[in-house]
Length: 220
Image (cartoon, rainbow, N blue to C red; front, side):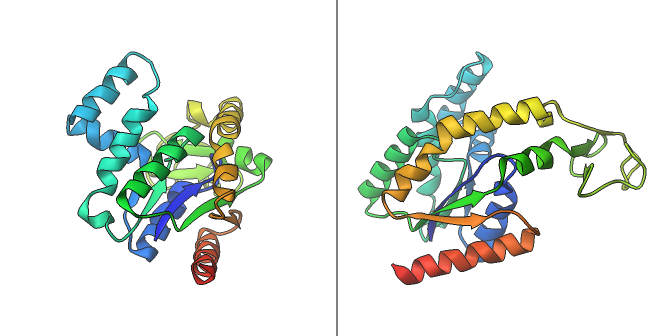
């Protein structure tokens, strides 16, 4: 299957993308991973992207699109892929359509993870990370440490990242609403959007998503 995954910050896209890609046996293509890989490997696209980033500028759509195109042309993506973080706006969605049409393929579904805005803010703003190991993650409501401010695993200090503050989260949501959310209407016009409730245990959300994708596949 060829799937685009969308949803607001805090909806669990990264977690679900990894799980769904494994279940569907397709590569998980993340924009963040693409940038890191191209920059660390010092590809021409990576050098170009880094020049914009070092100057404090946004990387132009055409660079992001070129990276995605290169990744989707790799052998492991021949049978399908799951795109996470791309397309990020309507112009990128149009470019993706053009690219896929050129290749004689099309998207099977656009999976829209829905979560109430206040819940998203609560999820992210309540997150606390261990200074010793960022993989040790706790939450002031959903996963409280035994001792406030102390990591259960290693005893390290727990802190709130700057980009997890409520003010920053609300800014990120506003960016999502203005830049990325319009692609949902763009894909709805093509009959590709499959909306699922992103709240609840991770396993339940994955099961929900797989069932929705199966129904979509059966209907086509």
